[in-house]
Image (cartoon, rainbow, N blue to C red):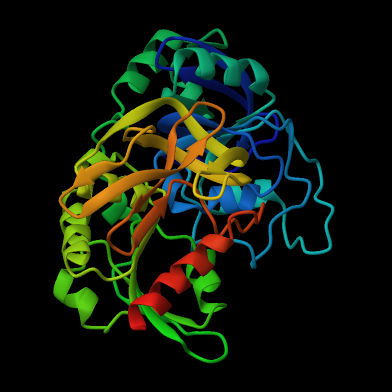
Length: 387
């Protein structure tokens, strides 16, 4: 990725790997960037989306047409930086208008070197990705565009060739690239009740905070942590976080989770952690056509029949049977949650050991909060194990 200063009217071009191109204006940094084109259906919470490590190496298309009107602040980021590779919006706000805003979204993108494009038909782009599937993409502006232009017309064939040279998301092992390198502790709020070892595969900042609100002291450990390092903190429970990349490459986290399951320590996983549990139990994983991303995805908790509106960000899913209990090395397992849009597995639970996971984000910093009970369910497991 190359960047330079912003240019509000600088021409920009977005080129998909199947050859379709969209022209617009540079938004954020000027230059070039590559990644996997995905779309997010959230109308709010763009700051949380941008700073979610799970979006590493993805170019995010916002389906809501007007983005940036609440600006950016220093309280809402989910990590220490923006992780998306690129950003695509239709109609960026001219000026933020919110009492919490400290600067504009455009300024933040420039400051962090995130190349984007605005003024494109994001509805048409989203429909294209739904029909053709998520795919590699490049955004080009400034010198990256003029260097391959003649008479002001970009050579889209040359740009397409560059897009097709970019790495694919299938087979990408990315969690260690976004995880913390050093362990740290998020203290319990109020009286400490439990200690949890949280494996950082791309964790969002709100996740340990949600546990801390419930009296849990959270020891956040690197993705490369060993089983010995996990149990060195004397955990009452172990948590596996969200994260980017292809779960079929995550052999170390799978082996680590199997070690936790063998000890029957209460275990909770979300997103990437759900896929890791699936693999640990012997299920396969597969890439979704265009994934689930946004804060309005309907999911049914099959253990209660309750339907939740949930926050998602995943392009892979667990291949587990919906209609039966499966026998695994660690006892019986079943699908606990399912997406009502497409019947994708959204949660797993063991019936003979204290372990469960969901494919979505119960911390939901930008909302909705329908799934917050899952942290209470984890607390209940730890209470039961202690008793």
